[in-house]
Length: 176
Image 1 (tube, rainbow, N blue to C red):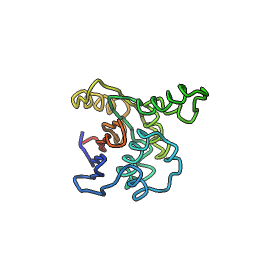
Image 2: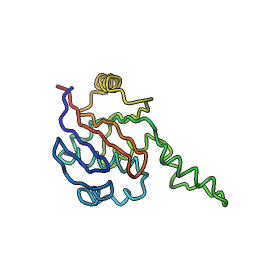
Image 3: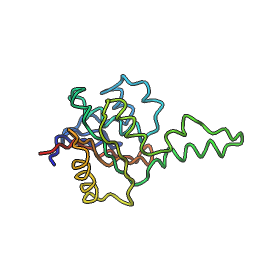
Image 4: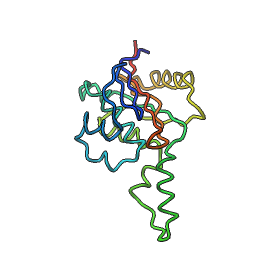
């Protein structure tokens, strides 16, 4: 497999293929580089981070190229940030759980949001691991190539632990 492009998003900003795009947070980067997807503001932080990464990495792909792609994402905490927000609506005195937050208590929603936005019809998977393991991740990506033959794989490690503690370390991979 060959890496076509790489992207890193942290609280310090975004770097695409080793070049600093901007020093801004998730919402600032979205407003500067995307700005046309109102559903973005209804998403949990993990989805925002993943969608922003996909937007920046897939911007030069045609709709036809996107159709046969795959999305394979990894992290350690799943949807823990959204889970905590949802739990707080259950713990409130009024016990009125938020249906808007409930959907984001599934980590694979980030891959679904990316696939829907970009009309990617290939495999979408979200793997939760005890710790980042690049060797295990590569085995999963190799398996994805063998079983579904995508035109590309949008992949990476996306972790959101808080406003000042997140990373999207993403890339586009293609078969050589």
